[in-house]
Length: 476
Ligand code: IMP
Image (cartoon, rainbow, N blue to C red; front, top):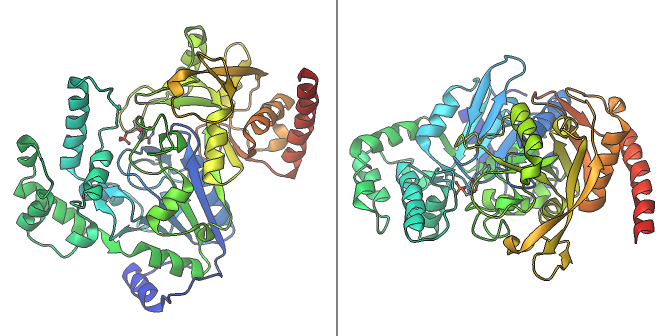
């Protein structure tokens, strides 16, 4: 089914909506990050979307949470065109409808810019409960970071996109939603709403000029503002497939993330994002996929237990040379480290799934030395005690590593039968120490560079797991 008139489609969705829970949904997935973000969630969303398109599903893609702090480079393999998204989900190009959900923090000017370059076949709808996050919040983000610095408090190293300050305004109930402004036509009225923010430094307040508010209003007029969960439910009732796409990752969750403070300002787990958009786990009957890289990367301040040591500088250099590893939003170089089974296991547990996707498997196979470390426990720096959960005060711990041989060449591989034994052995170790099950592996930067693991692959992994099991029993 193709949508010929999106306004009529929305009107009918409202009219046909009935307040009982629709049990007849067909397909629904969620995709979230495992560690500190930038795991390549887009590739997995893209693979799911392609699979669903082949099965003739219409796709509705829900961006779960966050705002301009996310950054995705999306390459349309059909047209070869490159897109840079911050607000739109990375699976957007293959979707029939994109919903920017109720929990999102959106700059209308920037969203309208991203929407402008999309093909007409993609319809973008913004939830009326989503919060406006404008220049004011970005300036305040920088202002608070500099206050932290001058007061001797460690800076967070935010992306500067103003998500934290927008969430703070929401908590103070001085935020402005799309529902609040969709019928406003005078810039002065909008400016008054923004300036209800308490303790707004004068130099920031002065930047929210009438001209700027006019620009914001003009951008809002170009967006379709809806009650997105009604649209979602109606689409699912019509037999569409849904994908809930999160941004950032478990390690940045505002409560469960990195030592409590070096985190973003929204939940980054699937249960948190479901609550944000107004859905429940029933809306993702096919479950969640948690995406990790075969190594770790991080931007921003805060502990990074598995960060590479000086000795690993040739490995870091190889990864920088191969994959770039720069933040899409800020351009900052990401710190690099080893795969952390403790963090990933915690991410799986708190997302309520076992399903893992492992990106950059081609890269880890080519690192100098041909051996990769994976962190299998945290050791307390003073007591020497080992733990297998993700602790709050991560600075107090150091990693316990296990070494696994890599040395494989699988760039652009798409067939699991072409994967060497070492790959299955590596995956078996990851599964063994995280309790996860790896169902996708990324083999390159392109959207087609992916291997979906089927019964054949599961057999190979299980064979390796059996060997590891025996080996570990001997060790104990
Ligand atoms: P904020 O989300 O801009 O407030 O930044 C808080 C922390 O989350 C900082 O360490 C950022 O570097 C990190 N962060 C936020 N969004 C992303 C992302 O999309 N990828 C990686 N790190 C992120």
